[in-house]
Amino acid sequence: MRRGRLLLLIVVIALGLAVGLVTVSLLRAPTPTVAERPPAPVVETRKPPLQADAEGYYVPGYSFTVDRFRFVRLSLRPEAFVVIAQTATGTDQEMGCDETLIRADTVHLRCDYSRIGIITIDGKFLTRLVTTRFDAPVLAAVVAVRTPSGEILYRARDSFVWHPAE
Image 1: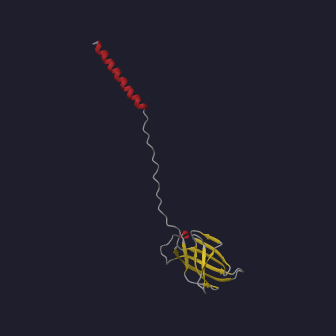
Image 2: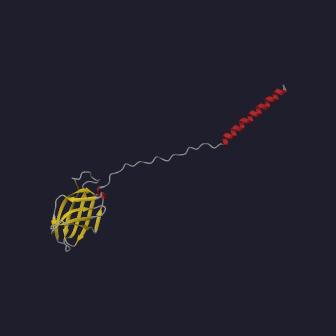
Image 3: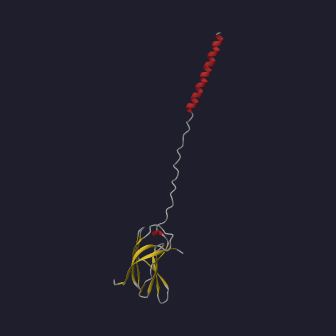
């Protein structure tokens, strides 16, 4: 019987060592880390462009002539300029603008042309976002033409219709 107890004691010790080894190996094993996922990128809805940033040209609601030159159109983007045409020949001439201030809601242009004088255009956009209606006025502005000495040759408020760049 002594032998049975000894054998039982050896089995219990062996079993205890086995449980101890398993426990130690589990404690030493690194715990799996849960990696934080970066937040999903926020998908921004595409905003329509502002009318002030639209490339194209603006045509006045009515035609006017100053000293043998007819005002044809103005452009803001990619470069600000005014197009006039000689009434005798119909030849278009572009005039770059020396002063240009184009904001989301307002426009100020000053264009010097030696044959006519100084053309200033001060206006406000009637629509903030680019329009798809090409028959609706989008810019209301006061157009003034002055001689270099300051005499007013023309001054009127007009509405302009936008046309996309060709």
